[in-house]
Image (cartoon, rainbow, N blue to C red; front, side, top):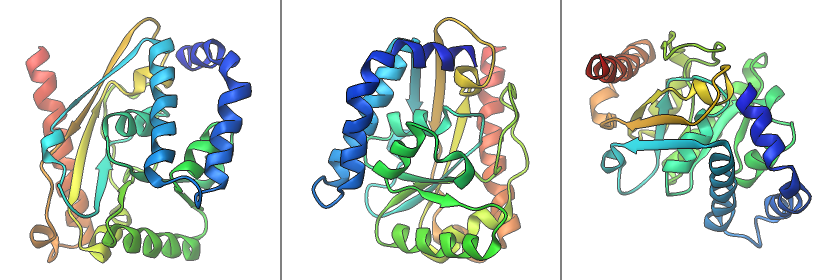
Length: 241
């Protein structure tokens, strides 16, 4: 939390120019391409990382499918997770997030710039609509981030919680590759009392193709993806110890 306040404070002088600039581009997608809007998001994250002394290291970028859309399923650690992924993911991508948390300043601009999907967690009918919309987008070539844990705990120490099986209905409907992502130390940025420079890690794991998971139940897919992520985190932890 301390880092969040520090980053906000260090960038207050940019807000009068930068936020209206983001808002203008978000409000006029007909004038600004997906790439142009994503570049604004990328630059905003760069500024936050620079002022906050946040270094994000990515591995496995070669695992990302070269063509078509895909679903990225990471473990969830905190407010920085999406930013860390988008900062290292050079091609435009979007995400699904809790609607109640999507309307604060700057978060709103990020959501609208990449046309993120706002999920009403207490509205099953709207949830089905979101699943269908994202599946259609991914089948058409778009890349999405979705956190199957559904939430996160403060200062979780890289613990991976249970994955919600329903999150994987999108993958089944879109028939697109699943890219598991192991996030490490992402929680330290905005969801701990850590101070000083921080290095976080985004590990893009080998994709799971539709042919591999098409005959599996969503509960089985959830277990498989969680297992891949947990194995990577355990591997890194063993190397450090």
